[in-house]
Image (tube, rainbow, N blue to C red; front, top):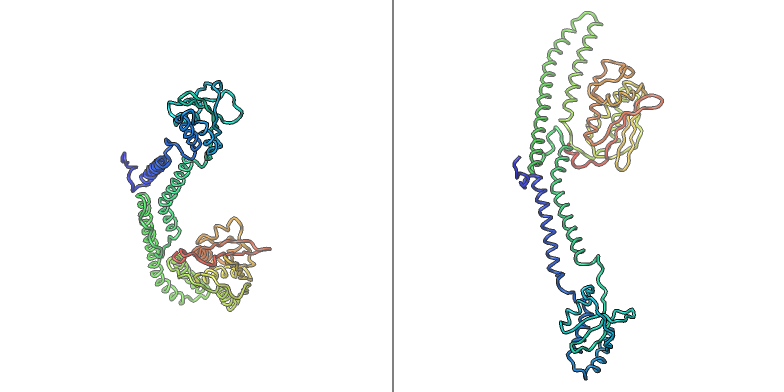
Length: 443
């Protein structure tokens, strides 16, 4: 790694470093702007209004001759009654340390060096201040204290809050910009399918994300190529095996022993059926029809009628109509596989349909021996047959019915589960969403 590689803005580390620098610069700019607007080195006129009135009145008395001061006291008392300016006896002065009183220092700074500010010797609980005029005359007045603004609405608190909000919004925006490619990656992984309908993952964002996106797209191409090669190979094998199977069937017709001839023909039929089932399972993910709004109840009633016509005891329990967004042919195939297992291992089967505003529940119930709890998860895997209780006919199936049904249900965004029926039997429960998300249509 390069020593200054973290400063590369194409990488996540560089974008995070840029975010930190931008946040620091933003805070400094906000504080500087607040300082220039409020100028704490200047006196706030709204807070110092009482000092200004008192200083103006005192300076007027100090500049006036002694004969005119009585009239000025009367006029000032009328104009500024709250100040209560009056003469002070010479013995009322008391030396005080002005440095410990910000109010006195501020007033002395306004009056100038010709005036002396002190505290009277006797205080009656009011905020009195004594002032010595340039000619030595002593006066007293009330020192008005304006109500200061609360601390929490001061300029610095507002500045800090504003800065915190700005930096938070900046951080949220940056976090979303950095995580958006990861969200796209997660959606692409969810939309991953082998039929080529989903678009490749966009290769954008920071350098690390682009590298992962390229690797994901290459992996998808390799998997798709592998599946295509496997399917073509098995299709070729199936095609090549059909010819010798056909020749063996023709030769079997010349077997004089009826028992041996029927067994040979049965074995050949089982081999051909096995090949077709395996190819159907392998091609299941490659031939997905488009989602459409269909009547699920009609599909289930059709499956019921088909098995009833073949002499099986299959009943339907549910509403006459139930609309949902599904792949009708795939759903028909899935339920057909489940009913085939039900009538194979049980005497009767029931297809139940329950509809809620968001979920459609389909149950295929039989009265057979059921499946033990230890094997329920294993039975959903391909090429896995049931235990001895359900494995009555070794030539009846190849362990693909439940696997194909489960693959179809998962492609719909639903779930398939195996449940016990009382007193005996099995209930295969399918739960499908009534409305499919847009991404499911491309799965």
